[in-house]
Image 1 (cartoon, protein in one colour):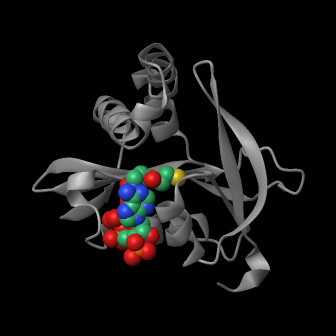
Image 2 (cartoon, rainbow, N blue to C red):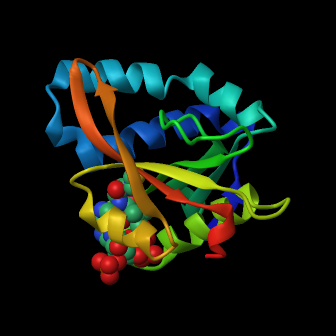
Length: 173
Ligand SMILES: CC(C)(COP(=O)(O)OP(=O)(O)OC[C@H]1O[C@@H](n2cnc3c(N)ncnc32)[C@H](O)[C@@H]1OP(=O)(O)O)[C@@H](O)C(=O)NCCC(=O)NCCS
């Protein structure tokens, strides 16, 4: 297993992997039509290419014998919370295929993304997480993230209740 920074050449791979991991984790929550609309928009190959080429964003792939089994994405905070300030960062995605979970690789991916977000020093960081995703909330709690708000995340016509988590730069976590 290894973690590597993704490049624009990985746009197609990332699009497929992101759709697969989202569907595996959350697909059962939505009507097929809404899920498809969300995947086609959020994980479109062109969008991945733009993110992968943008200096303010970074994506990492977790590979098992050269096959991608997880990814993490980080960038400027886009969450709707009144205390988000210019310069704040966000862990935007963290997914490991179920077949490769619970081996510590999610933590390594998360460490990699957080270290990159704080490469120039401590920074207030944010994460949006589904309100019912208790495993991920426990996981982020261990990194010092705390719930500071809520928002609605659209998946097709469905609106998910999400928690907004924050780790302030001053927390020293
Ligand atoms: C969250 C996730 C990346 C962690 O990866 P991992 O390789 O299993 O992580 P590690 O082995 O380093 O750590 C295990 C911890 O992950 C969390 N976890 C385990 N299974 C999980 C699951 N199905 N969903 C969410 N979190 C889970 C738990 O906190 C677990 O520790 P604990 O149960 O002992 O408290 C991975 O479980 C995952 O991809 N889950 C599904 C997608 C997801 O929910 N992503 C977060 C979206 S915001």
